[in-house]
Length: 333
Image (cartoon, rainbow, N blue to C red; front, side, top):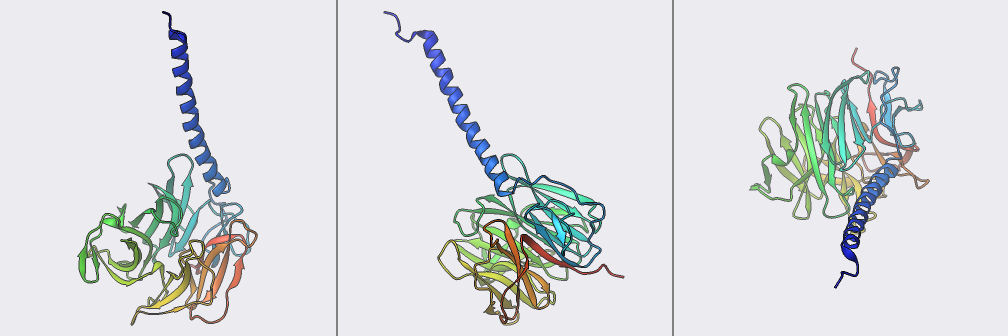
């Protein structure tokens, strides 16, 4: 008795299934790429204009409309960056590369925005910091997810020493001491490095077992120890005595944090006048002022705000449509 569908019909049916499966997979990948481009504003990666340098002191930031770095009230003529920071004679720019899976390109520039070095790592650009001398740089990329408020995220934090050229691809390998005891766990995540003036000591957040800790690290000794719980995205003050950080104060996933400042001598802390939830690594604009990004008032992008570090005053808007603020002083001499 003949096969009702026939051999040719069976082959065609199987071929159709394979084609449909391929289209589904392609559609999923295409949807991810389009989502990523929509999130990034569809910005192209462009270099800085020749006249744009770090030689003029002032507030530098990322212009969210173009994705490029701007200075003060001037046009955004700097390079394209998702995260930006500068100190000493160096700038660090994190760029989101197109394609799947997500990748981050960490670019090191000099004061004239000449590219000196670039490192590509997996994940989504998240945090960037440069030591005061410009010799140490660190960046964090999200390997999974894109929010600290959600569970199940994974990060990779790197440290680059320009003095030696040595790159620590992930500081998860650093020996960690928790409450005086050597600690081992598979779920360690580090993010938000900030460097001390000695270009050796650093502070960062470590997450493990559902808790976050402030850690103090020693690069030469290759060791780290926890100092305090519930500290995220630390930022060391210019005088090295205080750390600005975001503290989880609510179970609300849409508004879990509040900015605080911690005195390293005695580990006393106080909240800042900014009562809105800030998901950023605040930057010290001077010895008494912190800058940070909040979602844009128009529902798009973000805005740069500032608040006194002593808990007084009130927040003030610095840059509509900006993020990644950093105060760059005049070059020495």
